[in-house]
Length: 214
View 1 (cartoon, rainbow, N blue to C red):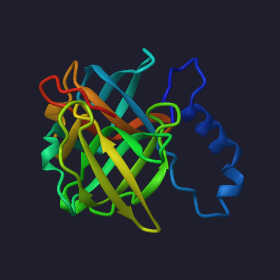
View 2 (view 1 turned 45 degrees about the vertical axis):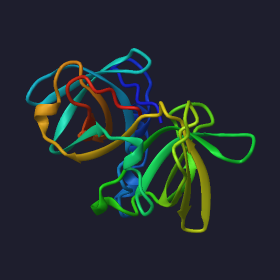
View 3 (view 1 turned 180 degrees about the vertical axis):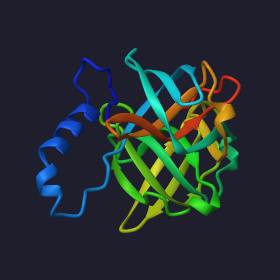
């Protein structure tokens, strides 16, 4: 979902605010719905102790509050060879005519995150792109040239064959802190409306100029 918030523009979060206002009377008699989460990808323009200003992929500049409970995660590169049978991964990919998926990027989950988002679904990175979170059942040999490596992925009720090109980014993550949130840092963040203001709840960030693949 696109995150495009400015005070004088329509956006997913402003629509959310309108919906919330229209539903106040009904909500008084019901359990409030879970807050809508909006994803934004971009580059940090500036920050203060309380706010984060980010330029998204479309060029829009958005200022967000930072939650007191903000979770920051560092995303960093690893090698294609680090993907092993039994690894739990997420891969953004494009469907191919032969039924396989061609990876745009691969993220190897830490063991503590095994099972996160398991399954296969559409993804908003590119038109028609997909996301598959699954366990690596089999790893093919690395081919010379651009082909890379073929992975057989299994998830509940399904499986996919993913071809990872040699130039596809492969990353993993570890806990980070706000010191990663510096001008120029590549980020992928998740925000909610808090007291009517777009608020960053979770931020994935690259370090020392590393650009997040998604």
